[in-house]
Length: 193
Ligand SMILES: Cc1cc2nc3c(=O)[nH]c(=O)nc-3n(C[C@H](O)[C@H](O)[C@H](O)COP(=O)(O)O)c2cc1C
Image (tube, rainbow, N blue to C red; front, side, top):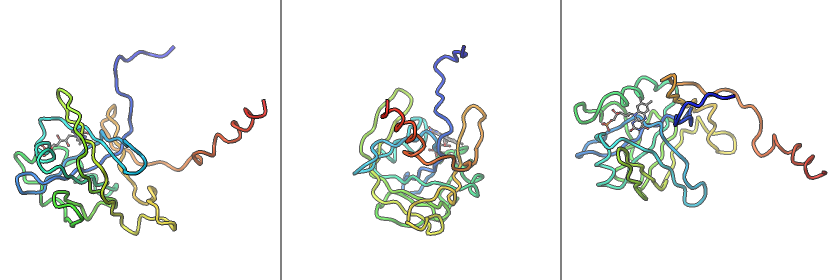
């Protein structure tokens, strides 16, 4: 028997990101862990849900551009800080050194090993949250986190995983098995039956 917890969202751990936008002419950043992969293909879309009370929402509606930056473990303090204070009362524009990409209103963070520039595709309007869906325009990665084939190697990124129940950041563990491979023997056995 399992314990019914009621409608508890159990989709944790999730990836901790730092979303950037330009609010009232100034870059602003907030921690966002409620992120999703929307359309893995071409184009690529991602989503995140943020409370309408946050300072950043208006800017994303206005400019229809934003960045999604992936901090490594070394940025846990700064990531938590931009998730603790609001740009409404605190200037967060100087927390990170920034670099320019293709979009004017998607501030990118030098210290984050992976940074994506996005154009707003759609907003899903929930009573308390905006779910922003963005098309990824460009992804910038530090060469140091790329493997020999030029792919992002998360063992080198060392992302911050967020867990709501423990209200903690977790580290990525070790690789366990190859995907689309671990089940192959079971598939072959099923085909023989
Ligand atoms: C680890 C972490 C993850 C967070 N994830 C989200 C999230 O997914 N959605 C959200 O609305 N707020 C989230 N927050 C809270 C916002 O980052 C926080 O309220 C921030 O101060 C809002 O900044 P702003 O008012 O400058 O936009 C998170 C905070 C932390 C520390």
